[in-house]
Image: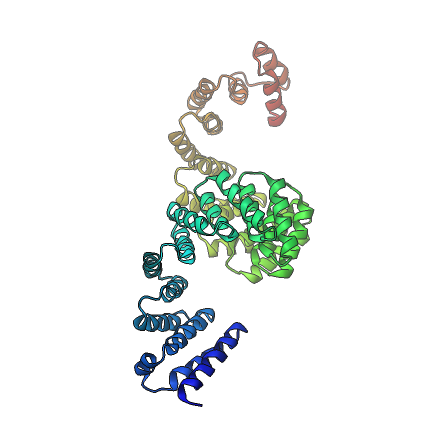
Length: 467
């Protein structure tokens, strides 16, 4: 067997290995073709099939995700045959997979310049435009590809996705419908259309399309997951749990357990919820929401030490995680650890210095500790932020009353009433202050305000306050 025949043999066998997806064996044969003649450049000049060996090896490298090696081979092939559009096409895809998008675009532009009807180049360039979020340019390329090959479902799918991202939902649905018409088993078209229906809050249609996706591809964990999310949003928690469980069997993922834990929590199956949050933490110890959610459940079951540990861990992961501070404050308040609660309010106020609600709540903590001046200072801040907050004036008036600042107290009650003429609590406290109500205060107050629409409100406040 002469060298040319031997090279042809290895080239053909390499192609057979490639078709069997035996990429390493294919590369070995292509290497053999190239090595037959040590004078590499001369060999290619003598027999163009050597160029084919280099190109084919590049394709094998591409399938093995060895993009740098693929680019080297495609570049070498282009050096010897610079007018071969296919070489630029494959190198463009290798550049794309290697995240070198500008170089990829250059290669596809070159292919289209050489052959404006090269459909695969138009499609590939469109894919890159989508990745770069240049959806209008992508639509132009996909539309051109469709003109040349109108029965390619994939082209409609990608154009539909571009329309979706431009919020051209009717056009997107039309393209997904066309893709399904061309290929009724095209599960990606059902999947994408389901996502669009979800966006439009058309949940029944979305569920139908996700179900069809699953029928065609029973291993589509994303379809199960997204259908579960819809069921959860529809408060169909049992159905959501079934789908989340299927996802956990197909492809264990921490968010699956977290979402399923949320369903168990809604069904008040707290132990199962805690188990799922714990699994989430095992799979992703940095996922802060799981500690926070588990902490809430521990707190609800009065397992305060475990709850505090979870809130602490959430804050350790993310020192700006406001919800964890808020929940830890509620726990401290529950066990009457007001000083610790105030420490957390201090941190929260650093994060949200213009939140009047935080100052108002901290004022309540100070009031519980009989730190009335500090409480008043916080209420000053509330009023500075929200001058029409009647609650703040009323609360400050009550504290002024406690410390004997009667004129300031009366001024604040009056201001609260000016802000809201039907603010029953201010009337009630003001009249208590004026008349030193007796045990039959309820009747006196209701009689005094018999012409006001808010008599029932005053009565309600009386029953709550029980002077």
